Image 1 (cartoon, helix red, strand yellow):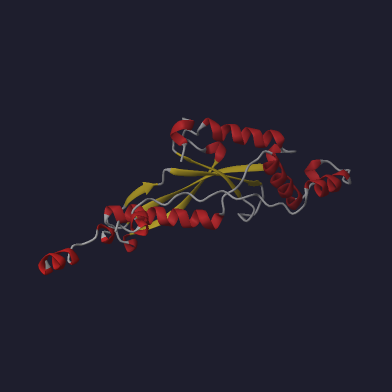
Image 2 (spheres, helix red, strand yellow):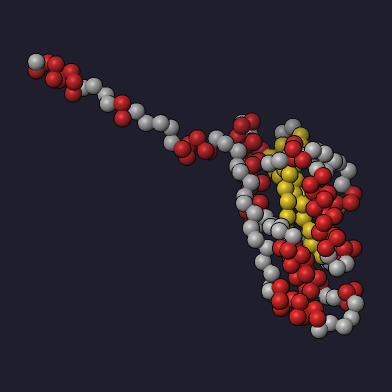
Length: 204
């Protein structure tokens, strides 16, 4: 009986068998695109309406700050949100690092850069949802020709092979036109997988 008791004590309970850590599993998956955030306005809708009611001149005399505030209000009224520039930068960095890890590339073996196209000069297909969004924003803005839409993407350059890979994720940015190259007020308002002419294929 004593030997049987010893045998029972040496058996491994099933509860000691542990599953892989969730953190280890997640580390092998591609980064997820960050959540969009609310667009912040400097004036309330009532304050903006009151301010505009005091103006007697035509809209061409509106200054850059006023046009940009009006754009924020138009976007919020249409129910749009934006991506944080910092969170998207982090997402892009981690996405390229994830791809490099899968390919066995070290971070010192490649560089990445941002690509920006003027919306009107973009030479590839754009999903209908994005085109309709641009049209809706322009239709609701006081002077649509004051708006500038751009498409943003990124690419990777591998030093050893001189090969380039382009990201499959594209972003739509909008801002009020400004003569100086200042990107502070650009709002990133959409993202899609492309190039494609299909809304279904564009889903992220």
